[in-house]
Image 1 (tube, rainbow, N blue to C red):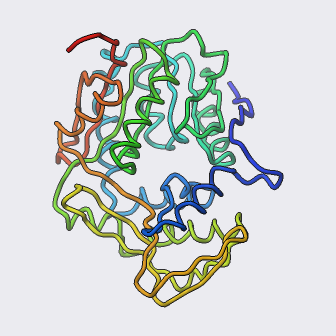
Image 2 (tube, one colour):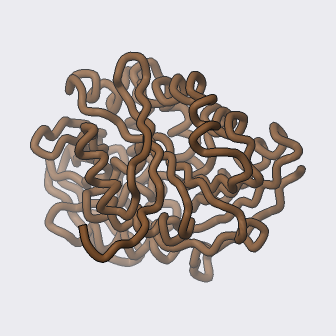
Length: 328
């Protein structure tokens, strides 16, 4: 069944630029530690670069998660059941998403993403691979509650959030997102979520600073996007990619570091950076079993099952929307 063009719920200005992007960038560049939320990596160019990252030899998460999805299909089918609408938060991977869809025989597939062209291309590819499956792409910022298409309103829902994207957020934001997902999916829903695991820092740092420099280009594309879409004058050649392990917070941090003093404009606002100053662009938190469960519970989800790959590098967790109760 061919996909529709889908819905667009992203607020844009008269030039087609996401208003939230402008607001986040201007606010983040005005703070003492300059920062831009990682979700803005994923314009069409950034989404394509991330797909390249997933194929790098240093980047283990995609291989590990694919291994789980490839080998545990019978368990997914038994626990999740057939006939659910799969709502994927982020455009589907050409590898991982089909493995889940093949395992559980869903009634519909609803990919949500803020990168419209990449979303529609991914949805078209999935629709071609599963010609009998209704596909309803929705261009939206899933950090906010999303009104799903009427065609899936009465179907039980399975949220799918692979790749440990939840790790990109600090605890407060991650909890808010999980609660928003619960509101989007509704009562009786389930969530299958990827969470990367704590491991040797050398392995982690290599995964986020690969020898070919693809992750560096992915990081620098954020500055290029700001220049393209917000009339920016950031001297991208004066920035370098930095990835480092922060043990206190169990996370890899990515930064864009100024190699010299620079001054630039974004959307008519002036900014400057001293040599060595950084723009903090991403966190990638790593989890233990207990910290993963605690985060899910805080976000309104009760963990039910957990799988890891053969090397114990990565986990997939199935959780149920927690039924509200008045006491412990």
